[in-house]
Image 1: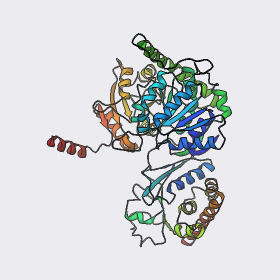
Image 2: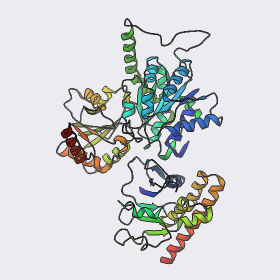
Image 3: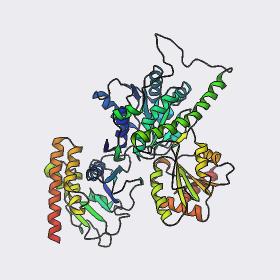
Length: 396
Length: 189
């Protein structure tokens, strides 16, 4: 049903429509409205057969989610930033045990210094955790990805993070078509767990694995993650058939036919970028965009296919590796290997710094006209940082 | 696309005002988006919220730097921050105050005279709600001033957003502000 609604509220409603049996979460900005909404739905009796478990921390939230999922319950949680970091030990166990938990990440910077605003540092820190990671461009896509995430997770027996930009999406009030429970029911099959913890038919899950088999277990996780790409693509195709909307999938191109320059990005910045690309194309500039929806598994081949005819690629990232540069960049470089395409990286929007069309345009025009350095930080107050760094050097 | 930036202070319902506007736009089958400036909101601290209303679907998510209209819920902000920053030429400015333009120190060069309107929204709010919360009042005035959204849509969003008793008094206050501005515009015409 089409509603004018806050992004978080819409996610709470669509998660409810997916009929989770256990929700366990600990509030942290900017994710709080989602779990508040869900706890209210459970309390009002709108979500029958679901237990909302209050815990004292994110570590417990993920631990409870692991226990619940292992008994065969459809399980959901949500977190952000330091909350995600606090649950990390359990995050790796969820994927290692093959438990199809769905978790929303309301993307937020990591401290210190403490900062509650949006960037992608939190979910990017879990790049290698063995979870599937899907990034939403809009609140509509965030809603749709949750429906797809439960299906992908349960088909693959792998946990899925649905990443949506904190505040920019979670706190935006806009029109969103929220699938009803009946619509979701027709798309999302009943959860049939691969194995369950059942006192009547006991098995062990999570026993110690020694050197003789650990490599094989990890290789299988690798293979499963790669295989999940087809399921992600399929989930989007079937979603379009059922709901009539393009949402999810591996990558989504926008006006890249014959584009000499292609910008690659993840998440809500894609909306602003598309408006800018329309303007620039109207001015005769040859430029397009590719949005990466699935960061893990990384769609190396699909991306390579989308970029094979362009001249220049710019990777826009809302997180980076201190001392090196872009995170997504490394994977993009892998996709570009041997194509002879130029690549540069733009780090933008850290800690909620607004990414303005004006600044983006100046950077892109420069990249096209005269070239840019391999790594650029958008709108960085260079004079301030240079003088502070000089002062530090002098005092060492 | 019509872009509105709302300035006020924590506790004045700035974010709610943006959401009510977006809801009103939605009820008129337009596309609308409202979002706060995501500060650490505290009572009394300057707060900014944004609203976009468009005939087409809205993709942009950057803060509004070139608004077509400004709503200033607290005139003391004029001395504190540049609320007019980036206002488009001939953009609308709606200020909550019982002072005149001269008393507020707004020089003619800053903003268009004919597109500036000062309404004693806090006084109207006190009369109807008994509380100095001017957001709904200003939306009534905004409707009459810009004709971007109808007063019926504003009242409908108020009724959807608030519990019946609060909604009723806010709707009355918005209607009074609407009538007040219509009269004022007619007198100046």
